Image 1 (cartoon, one colour):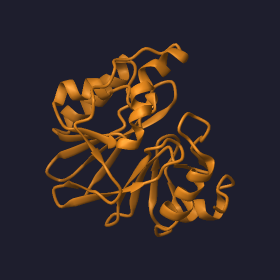
Image 2 (spheres, helix red, strand yellow):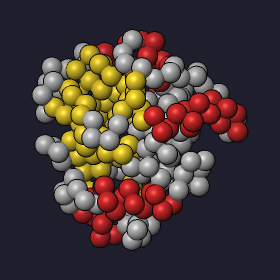
Image 3 (cartoon, rainbow, N blue to C red):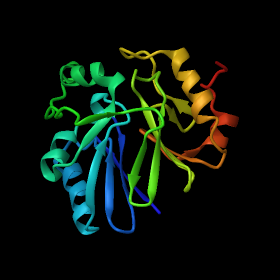
Image 4 (cartoon, one colour):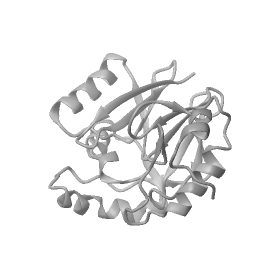
Length: 214
């Protein structure tokens, strides 16, 4: 069984996640820590829980989701991966920071790329990768079928959806990802989004005003 721990970080109020099992093995997803306190809170939690990080993943590579990549990889020397289609976004993230007058330590390059239907294993637990482009060209979600939850990045939020007007985004592609990948999941699946509170697939199917038929 996996425990999901979230932290809300940086000026964009991004949700960073740590998923860990009974053996304390952990996967870090979208480390968005930006200021000194955010880094301290994040690393102190890992130390206090005696976690053993084994992998760093990005759901996508907009700058607010990778502010903490460099620090995580320096501290733990673990593999790092995202979807190859997001490489142009990754490569431009540091320069994009200048547009917001935001500086951060540039992320190291990925060790490998993840793809649709890959399985990420944490002991006996699994995360299935769903390729869900539209917010960015390489956006992915991480789905745990056994425990009925998904880490959705910036694809689907509580009563909202990710923007599609950034470079590489596409509104029709985003709607297709939500309708055909996320809304195909059971209604009771909890959605841990890249911003905002937890929601559920069934609730969003019934209430999300931004999801249109593809």
